[in-house]
Image 1 (tube, rainbow, N blue to C red):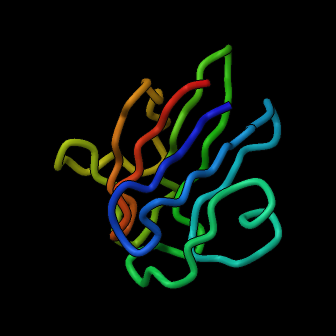
Image 2 (cartoon, rainbow, N blue to C red):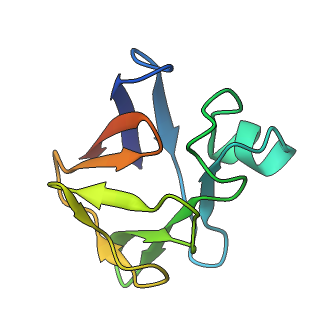
Length: 107
């Protein structure tokens, strides 16, 4: 389980427990579609977040965050994360996704 806690932004205070499976990633985006609401993170009111912004997946026992080519990108420590390149999620890692600062915890 990857816990995503929004610590700054429109959705501050919300926590999501993502449970990606090997062939079934969890999606993050502005979409209010079922796969975002039920298994991912839906942030329909943040205009900086792309409809499908990123995905969280598990491979080889590690969790990965991948920006799927979003319009405004994702920032890690003020640096843009390279699109479509999986980034290993580390405990306590914080990413700026749109206007939302999200802290990830591995459970």
